Amino acid sequence: MTPGIMVSPSFWSDPDVFAAGDFPGKIPALPELRGHVLFPTSGSSGAPKWIALAKTALLASAAAVNRHLEVTQASCWGLALPLHHVGGFGVVARAHESGCRLATFGRRWDAPAFAAWLAENAVTHTSLVPTQVHDLAAAGIQAPPSLRAVVVGGGHLDVETGSAARALGWPVLASYGMTEAASQIATQDFSALQYPYRAAPIPLLPIWRAETTVDQKLRIAGPALFSGMLLRENETWHFQARGGEWHETSDRVLLDNHLLTPLGRADLRVKVLGELVDLEEIERKLAAASGGALSPGSFVVAAQPDPRMEHRLVPVFDASVAASAVQDALAAYAAQAPGFRRLGPAVTLDPLPRSALGKPRRAEIAARIASGERSFGK
Figure (cartoon, rainbow, N blue to C red):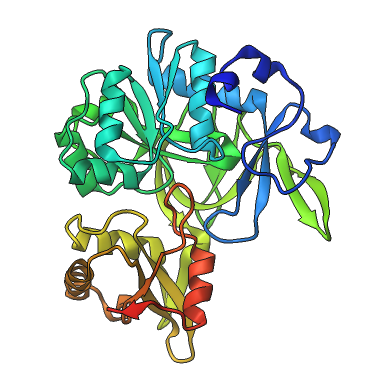
């Protein structure tokens, strides 16, 4: 189904279940799925599953984002993300909810072509992932004057890249969200553009109630929350409804007066020499040490079991990353890293397994490293 058809009221009033992706076989005729859209997800690790979001939930999220970003009928949402991801689907929902124009990039990602397309279509709002922002900033491309907001989701946009994009006129706004929440939970507003770029804190959207557990895991409740998951066991699909009003995530955050600061996933912390190490934090420090040479999604730090250290930390790079950039970044990082955060020899995979949005598939990467696979060491 094309984005243009999905903007029409008939799509949103249709009670039939819709899969925003290539569903394996026939969608089961379960009453719980009426009026729902299914999104494939496996997260950064774990088994594949389909998240069921009611169309009313998607529109509740769309309305909240539109109000937050001052979208009107005179605006234009630009779609440059895949529809099988809730971030792309959310763009279509926002265009429908606001009654504004929807422009679809509809071609292979190319930073100069994307910027020209924005200008040609007078796009005012769009959503991008950090890799796309990195490409625009690295190419030195100026933002078109029509553009008011670039919501950056699907990963962490570092300060250096965000600042470089801002200097070129790109109104990048950090956001935090997930499929289970129909996209955005927290998003910076226009006031953030008055100050130098910061990745956090991020204001919660008003439709969400949030709290944290004793170990800082985020719990959320609100009208845009998923209804449940469609899981497959022994060739049979079954629906697992969400349990209760609140959903506990695997993400650690700080909450302070409706401001959210992401701290990383709880399942990405491992013990090294008795110290608890956050893999995402090390990745952020490695990216900072590279001076912008390492783009988001081009590398990960994988933890591998070790009989002496508990875990050893392995930097894994995509084959497209220049050997000099890897060497320089690792040297700069090693100069300031304590012993328990030291990285082992680098490994390169060709290609580094990634999702359609450029997110590394951590479980697959870890398995391939454990099996001894590598293109070559650097």
